[in-house]
Length: 494
RNA sequence: GGGGGCAUAACUCAGUUGGUAGAGUAGUUGGCUUUUAACCAAUAAGUCCUAGGUUCAAGUCCUAGUGCCCUCACCA
Image (cartoon, rainbow, N blue to C red; front, side, top):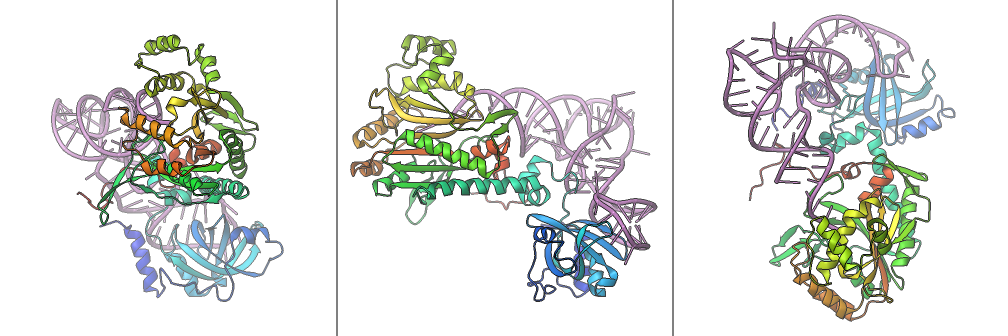
């Protein structure tokens, strides 16, 4: 940490301390018996509170000095207010603090609300106190922090420098709160299930692993909360949801971060169609909370969010874009050969995986959305209930928006024997991404009986991306994953 | 993992054909009682990402590495 702090700043700090001031006081003394006011409130009530006293505190992000007069832009909470420091209005020792003040420092001020000669509502200081001395220079006031790596690594600087960044994260919080209210209004229970799983499941993904020392036990960071949430449905919690941080040990991209937020919800006595309705409601609630309006622009394209969203059967979308039926084995085989894809034997998981690869390759990127695609091949849906009328297909939908898959829902499979069979097929499959072990306890839970239920997972980060028009997932995550920064992280070789 | 791009002062960025390292802002010092990207004057600040190579001479050209970005692959 040598020469980590700027020498000029350290000198200012020493000057400040030599003057007898505390650079990091434990309490604010200039407020006296007056409460702290927020700049937005003062400015909103400026006309009625002219010439009355108020106290403010915040960060100094602008400064114009005139010797015996100084103007300071004080930023707090949602806004900022201009502070006027006039030598003849302040105690000498307070005015002298200006010498030790830099951009980025925090100050507290007591003073009167008045208009400047130019008519701007300001607070004319009668007492000034430095609350926190900064030892690092804030970025350029006009260009801000632009380097995308620095913005992510020093999000704390990005946040206080770029107002739009603050707003986006506040909107993200508002969207999550709005969705939470949708659930609570429908008698859902918010729950927390384990993050560390002895067996990972509920999705196909590479997990992170860890070890519990006392139990001498290998554990996996969850790749999905699904199987625990459905255990709760078995337990009689008929409507549950969780905003679940999940972890996948896979590549990073503008749409992928190793840890991300998956909203999952399950409701007894409904099916995937009920989930479709609820998903639409959730997306609209989130959009309203973010003040999106009818249309959002994402990556250069406009998306109309007026309900109801389009709905198309998987088989119909397949035929529409490929020109033949997904069940037309000869046509599918020919197309697979054309795109140099393996042609699997049989009609089990491998075959339908190949059919779905075709779907993803030739159809999915055309589904800009918002659109629900429903009734997926049962063979590739180990956790979904086959349709009563045709067990080739399962009660499942995916929701697409902005060209990305944002949600995935099932009529939950609740036949324990069929579930066990599908798990066994999965484990037998050579696909390294498939689960490596059967969660027998989950099968046992189903054996106690899970009522018919619908369940859904929504990728919250991607939803936020689209609704806020952010091209990269990094810009909707406060602290996206980055490589360790040279020289800052302590060595941790093991 | 493949391909492409970028890396220069604390921040934002210039840097021509290879010929002494630049600006604005921030900082420091001085001045200034109505500014709001204040102004005036002075001043300090560089591992030009790293390591090699070519050359009389490299921020600039070449090779490799590192980091970041984009893209493809991967990704229920």
